[in-house]
Image 1 (spheres, helix red, strand yellow):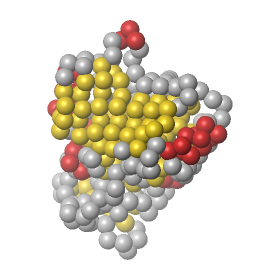
Image 2 (cartoon, helix red, strand yellow):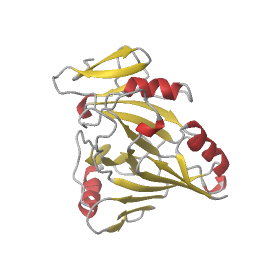
Image 3 (tube, helix red, strand yellow):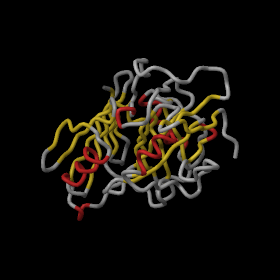
Image 4 (cartoon, helix red, strand yellow):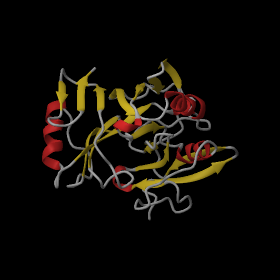
Length: 265
């Protein structure tokens, strides 16, 4: 497997990705970040809010914006990520959410996350040749590490080399700029027609590498992933209530027959 524009080196305690092209990668932390597309995500959990707060505030070091017995809202960079509690007898929801990180910090993010949790890469995804827990998305020009929270949500730090967001220093949770992916699960043999209808309703075109079982809508600053029920994620992807507030023209769209609502912020 090729490295696709990036090779990685370790320099002291700081891990840097160095471009094979002449473009300078090491930017100051004051560089303006791209506009965040996913402003608010509202998800469900059957895990006690206290346990979720211990993970997101204690392990991931996210700022807690709101907390009560039945809900938790944290700041994932510029995205508000909210979990509303529902009893386990109503189901055990789980989701896929990705966090954008500086494009040169995947090795540093890997080390930081391994100090806190196990990593959980997709067994079918192509890997970094020297670090098999790092997934290489060649068609997206990105590298990622995957892990889970107490509810089984599949979380991801993703370094997108198409973004000009490199930063100096070792990785910390402050390097997370936003939630850049939320997955919506559909039950259809070919997801593309449904995904195109959704994209038209919320003003998002298809992103790279679509298929009958997977369609990404948006761009590197925020993607709505349309995934096939029972196939994607950890092999048992299912449909759970999801509310997304995102940048765009005025819209408020509910997917017919499904508990999905997407509206403009």
